[in-house]
Image (cartoon, rainbow, N blue to C red):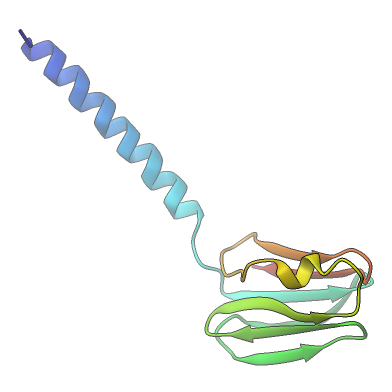
Length: 105
């Protein structure tokens, strides 16, 4: 038989789990700007909500509909091109051969 104290403990555990989940979801907030660097030099900094195509020496970065992605790269492995679109604070796309970093702020 379930006691009243068991129900209270169960409810407390569920509430704690929901609070922890909520904290993690708040930390995953959408970013407001995009920072693109090439060879440690800032190439572009602007709003994630302004559609723009930034052409670099070996890469093309597309900012559209609140997301940023690398649409083209002349490097061999194409990891940056195959990376998912990014939109949340702290997310990055890195092209090591071309020394390009796309970061959401």
